[in-house]
Amino acid sequence: MQERIGAKHISSGDLLRAAIADGSELGRAARAFMDRGDLVPDGLVIDMIDQRLKKNGADPSFMLDGFPRTVHQAEALEAMLAGRHIPLDHVVSLQVPREELVRRLSGRRTCGQCGAMYHVSLDPPRQPGVCDRCGGELSQREDDREEIVRARLDVYHKETAPLTAFYRQRDLLREIDGTGTTGQVLDRILARLNTHH
Picture 1 (cartoon, one colour):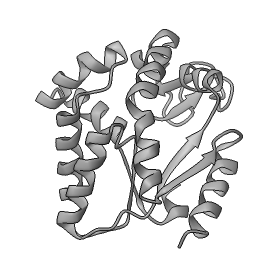
Picture 2: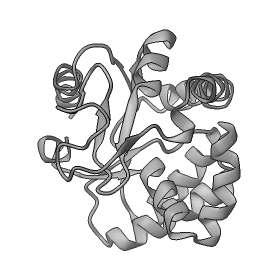
Picture 3: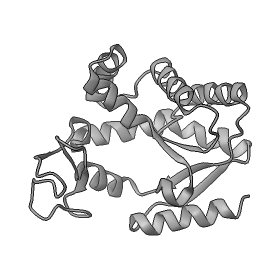
Picture 4: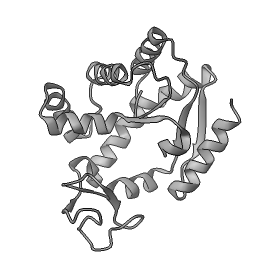
């Protein structure tokens, strides 16, 4: 995706999982929240994104995935970007029915060795439970279990829904139909972003 959009992909979830795998202080603090399906506190996530943007240097071409999730995080992001003189061009909100989200998220499987992602029905490996790339064992992440996914979606709607109004007021919100294949959704995103340049 980042090749087609022409911007570096920065995923807050990937950053958090890397911090947990490294056993860092941030990772230990975040793990307890993620295992319950709760949002990681704003302060931890904001610090993590700020550190990641510092690594990005002066390159203004990046897309944030999974951040911000609260209005407080959005305000912190505005301050971070203003301090770096980087404009925020677009905020993409993918619209997907709840039960489809549950199916997608609870069906994900990850390789314990190389980190490759699969889906039991949408993108299965050639051999069930085995990574096509390295032969590693596939497993379901703790936060992808169905009951955790449902809890995460409840938290998402409560905590994240106000962002829609926040970014709509700034004329940055691009709401996109997120159903269909990855390619179809990406085509819709690119078409929509290109009409707002």
